[in-house]
Length: 377
Image (cartoon, rainbow, N blue to C red):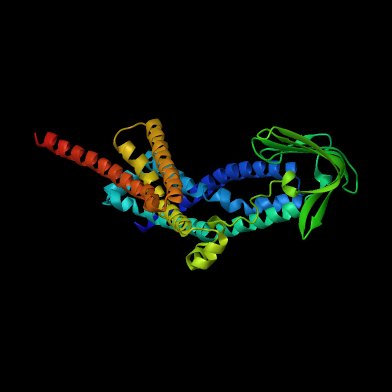
C-alpha cells in the first residue's frame, strides 16, 4: 500500500497546486483591481501599488487553499474511479477506510500550511498594509489628481480641481463635505496645496469661501477666508489608519497580550478569543475537506449516481460547509459566548465524510449479501 499512498500523494499535490494557482490568480486579480481603483483614484505611485500587491497575497491565498484541497481530492477520486484503481486495490484486500488514509494525511499537510498563514503570515501582512496606508496618506500630492474631474474619496465627500501646476499647486478647488444628514459644508478657493504639519498632511486652501448649510437649525452662512487648513480626509479616506485590530496581530501576540495592552489599544478580550478560535477552526476544517472531496465522489459513484449528479452534489456539500463557516465566524465575532460555533463546519465535514463512506460500504455489503443469496438458490 505504500506505492498506493505515494501515487495518491503525488497526484494530489499536482492537482492541488494547479487548482490553488488558478483560484488564487482569480482572487488576487480581483483584489488588486479593487486596490488599483482605490490608489489610482486617491492617488499613489506604482511602487506603492506593487507593495500593496505583494502584501495582499496571503489575504487572497488563504480562502482558496481549503477549496483547492477539496477540489483536488474530488478530481483525483473521480479519475481513480474511472480507471478502476479503487476497485483494484479493494480486490487486493484494502478496505475503503484504508483508501482514505492518504487523503487524511494530505488534509493534515494542508492544515499546517493554513495554520502558518492564518496565525502568522496573514496578520503580519495586514499590519504592513496599515503601514502602507499611513505612507499613502502622507505622500498624497495634488499632482496625481485628475484635472477637471470630480472624484469621491469616501462617502459624503466630493472634490473638484480645475487645474494643477507642475509644482503641485491646485487652482479653482471645490471640496464638498457632508458632516451629517442635516449639515453640509462646501469650500471654494482660488488655489490650494498639500502641506505637512507635525508629519501629518493637510490641505491649505487660500482666497476662498465656506458655505455652511444646517437644515436642522435652518441656517445658511457664507464666510470669506484668506487661508484655511482642512484634514486630508477631505480628499483621501484615512479615517481607519492606525485603528487597532485583532486581525493585524499574530496569534502569539494575541496570546501574550495583557489586559493593559488590550485596554490601551481599545481591543476587547472577547474579540481576541473569537479571532484565535476562528484561526484554529479554519485549520481544523482544512484537515477534513480533502477527505470530504474524496468521499463525495467515491460514495456517489458507489451508489450508482452519474458523474454530473455526483459533482453537483459535491459542490453543494462544499457550499453548505462554506456558508456555515462564514456564518459561524460572523456570529462568534459578534457574540463571544457563541465562540464554540466556529468548530461546527469541521465537525460537519467529518460527519458528512463518515456518513457518505458508510453509505457506500452499506451498498456494497447489501450487494454481496444479495449475490450470495442468489447464488445460494
